[in-house]
Image 1: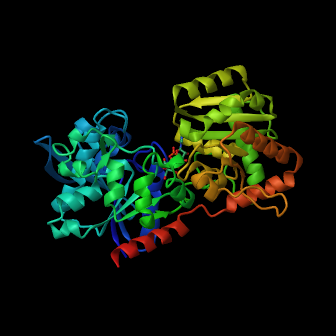
Image 2: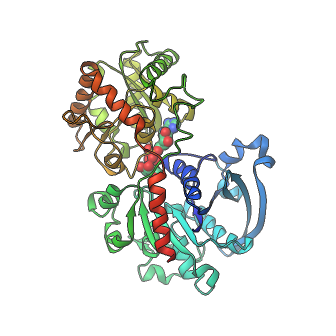
Image 3: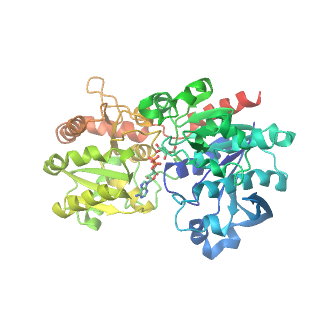
Length: 483
Ligand code: ADP
Ligand code: GLC
């Protein structure tokens, strides 16, 4: 069994902006159950410090202090740690780089995460902790395989470490000006000149990972095929095709102890398979009352919990607003993101009080309530590496209506009226009429064939969305690397 250090930019229970945090908060425990020793390292963001401000010393332990060189200056690093059950989380502290309101999206992100990765590699030496595998997630840790192989190759303690790089979203690549390569990252400039870390006219953290990582994974089998094509590859398909024999698609799971309608403290009323129908109605009525929807336990409630970005396919919804408003449904949208989408949803709520609610923002507890109360969960993504939300929806008996892409295709089994199988609904083409037709099919089934609807709900709530199967596949992957 392997000693693994996961390097990531966010993770529960400490900090979350999206599905990556769900993964980093749950896959280590699943791997630990398989016998691996797993640790995680991430930046010590302001958000984490704020969250634990009143019990900082209880939660965090100071581990070490040292410096790394950035632009020829020695910049201090402080490492803290915290145990969550059997998993050790490390944090890289630097006030200037990480104590800001947000996590990413700053002009100096290349420098911030360059510093982070250098600090991570130096920590191994400082703590004399040598994992067999460094498992890096997304561009924020994408330079580590390159740094290990190019900057530490003469030190056997580093050179024997194997690397895995997981793509959670290929549209965020960490592309920067080549001028940061040597003075900031400490990576020799000829690696830009010979093309190894070059992408277009600059450097790319993600592309470097595709060149140097021993194995590459992404978060569903379908997405692993899609990213080999120009339609989904975001200009990385060429290099990925060269590495396609090392590219694995491993579907995400969720923490089924945390996401459990039977025990979830955030929902209005707990329920399980036995009383899912009544339980969901009780949650629906409570949500309707709290957020000003017309109280009616029998109306079909459609839920959305999402970042409101082009990735998630909301432009399809925006093309069908009048049809949606004319349908015998209620809609609850929880999310924030692009101004145009927010603006449209705000107007939609204004014109449809009692029928449509748009809650703008990020609200963890409310997300749980929406999964519990909704009958249908809408996720018509343009692309979706895996998707965590549809897994949560199924776990709470809300049937996902999805576009057949990436992990949505792999995890949502469409309703089959002949053999009475399925856990949701799906459509193939990125086309708003197709989406609306599928929504109409779902509405028809809900009102006119409640037996089949109940069967789908039972299928969804009993579907295995845990990490169990996928943790074994990661084990096979790690084993292949170490054998
Ligand atoms: P992505 O990571 O691309 O945003 P995923 O479906 O993988 O999409 O994961 C989204 C995660 O973030 C889910 O756990 C979902 O419940 C949560 N989430 C998304 N938007 C919100 C929000 N506005 N409030 C609370 N939770 C949210
Ligand atoms: C990204 C993807 C999402 C995936 C998540 C976790 O945010 O957009 O599809 O579920 O990462 O892997």
